Image (cartoon, rainbow, N blue to C red):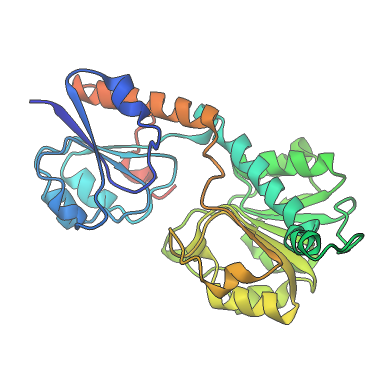
Length: 324
């Protein structure tokens, strides 16, 4: 009987690297979005997760389940407490192991440049045979505000410094020495969130998606931001209130937004927000470089092999660390 792995979300391992890496004795299956996940797990040994909810009912419907493996870092919508109660091993892949923190930061900088340089209006100008328009925004001497200063935030701060930007940040546990090491103006705890919004010309989100962060960026946050500021979101779509963002963009409160994550994935291409010329959106590809995906697949494959041998996976999540 093969050791069965189910990619329990769309878009995981799109090059089918896992199957080739695992070889004989393993069966790697694709998720069917037309059927409930609970109906697809009866003989599954490993669930690879991203954003499709893995509920207690799903876990209970998988009597052979041995490993809940996040295809990335942060779990979203997975009942880890129930998995631990069932003695199912839980693991993730940390960004520093794949280099994805740098790749995601590069993509955030791409989005920032595309918005600042009016990419949407520039394309329209070419179509209209206009030259020398639109006017764009220089990044030098602007302030980048990082909401969350983890590995990706650190990398983005370094990239921004290369463009002559200043960086400030807030995080849950402020490190007094981190700002100095990164060449940032300051890093404070979340109590300084409002101060950051009032100072930053660009606000970049680096928070995990959890109940406390759903809708974290809403009308109050946009009201506190500088008029003409730019929002970048490479974290998770639901952290930002879509309607509040649309209002801020159409009213002129924000100069633009760069989004790699959206409220519904795949998003409706007719969503009015996507038609705005000051929005640059990409389909959740910040960490999808060829290099990163090959390393990620290799690390996940090694965890699957380890669990199949009865060993503990690398980057195991312990019950007390399940929220990080």
